[in-house]
Image 1 (cartoon, helix red, strand yellow):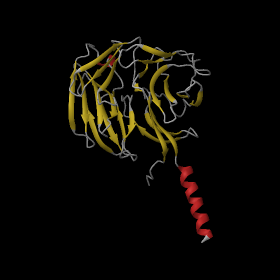
Image 2 (cartoon, rainbow, N blue to C red; image 1 turned 45 degrees about the horizontal axis):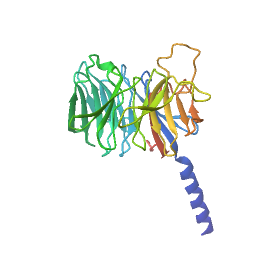
Image 3 (tube, one colour; image 1 turned 180 degrees about the vertical axis):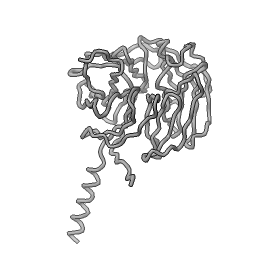
Image 4 (tube, rainbow, N blue to C red; image 1 turned 60 degrees about the vertical axis):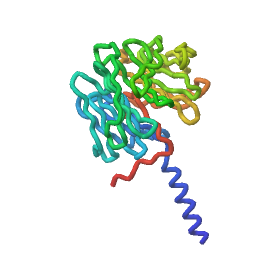
Length: 298
């Protein structure tokens, strides 16, 4: 009996070690979506994009399938690269945002005239659509990442207009804030205020949810030991640390070499970084997978 207990303990320890925090990452100019082990930095899985595809949003669904946008559409794929569904967008539009809804569905953001925001259920069926004139002629200049807030409204950072819109599921604009920057994405904080990564501005800031007033700004040189390039998506982890996507696609000076992912604590100190351009490449979007094990694909 004692031998069986020891074996059980060993198996349990092996199971725990095998489940490590992972990062599902992608970025404009990156030919792949990748799964990276946070502890080792090793790439454990790749999903190749097709020629001309550009991924600026990636996520893992409740069912364990990979959701991503690719500019001309959005796909849901399995870990063995089988396509569950492929939502293609019309000519002269760009599908730049495919994010998860709070009910487990998907929110698609399609840049166009007008812009379209479409909710899909877990089977890929359309269940809601909002049309919105953003008054930006060129679709590529409209937005990148669009998320649903806790109140179920959509938060749309309009890059060319340097403003942030809060829009209901019926298409009513309930808040509009002019900001000092072209926000790539947004993050709804615990207190309801909004953290906005401002791309080529090389900073991110927090604004008051009600008034739009800027409350805090973190500039390129404010984080000791690293510099902010194009500030892409920012995640807030369970420990309240921020994980920053530091995209280098617009960096012209070859001497500038910064990590692609930066984790900072509440005091703004770097506690972890990913710096591997050879194996990982450009990162503008990330999905944090805690205690995750890649499914057995054999």
